[in-house]
Amino acid sequence: MLQQVELYSALVKAEQNNLFAKLEQIYANLPRTSCDGCATCCKWGSPPAFFIEYLNMYRYVRDNMKKDWLDILKKSTEYFYLELVDVNQKCPFLNDDNNCSIYNVRPFSCRSYGLLSKKDFETGDRGLKKLAQKFKDEYDLTIPEEIINYELPWCGKVVSDRGSYLEKSTLAGLAAQIGSLDYTFFPQELVDQEGTLLPYPVHLMNAVLGTGARSRKIKVMKQFVDEGSKELLNHFVEKASSFQF
Image 1 (tube, rainbow, N blue to C red):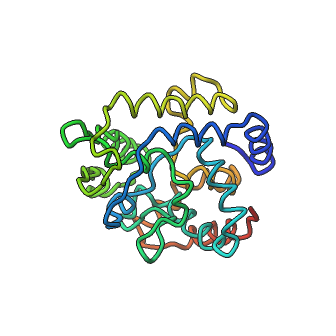
Image 2 (tube, helix red, strand yellow):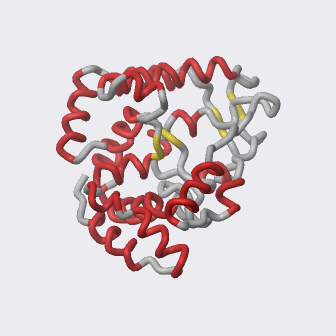
Image 3 (cartoon, rainbow, N blue to C red):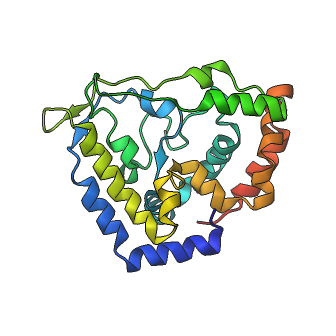
């Protein structure tokens, strides 16, 4: 993925092509919503986001949240390395008050949660059973059953200002529009295969950590699972903590 110098080049390209304004126009097609703030949807992990949404989040954090940079980098590093093996991992942007610290730039997957009827809502197969078997066979690494089998529950607590649920096709169409903005940075085939759809902290760590650090992910995971240790992880947390947005 992108290193820092390429990241800033992408930010300039997005500005030049008016992509952030186009993203906001797509978001505006969604109804305004409210909920009781239980944060269940934030605690199962960090929802996926397109690359243009990540750029939107990045510049928001850079320009408005300097005092939170260190905390974001530390939590995002832990999430990047341990999301598949630590059942206690949650979205790094969920603060201590159960509020989203980047609510204004949350991705489409967060904005659209709760807008489907229970009948239409399907979490689908996350593909973790096959991935878990691959990790077991190739690395003798066991992914916890709680993570493999977890399914994000349907939420009936979201209240829409339109008073009705949306059709699946409507949400899929809007998501496709956002995905098409990523064509500016990546081949269409990669985008269409959801290759640019990653959680915010994963996008961020792809920019913050060098290739060598990212390649040590399996070793960090195994040390955590086999020894209950974060010694290797802490090294990369320290490395990431020096990053300047």
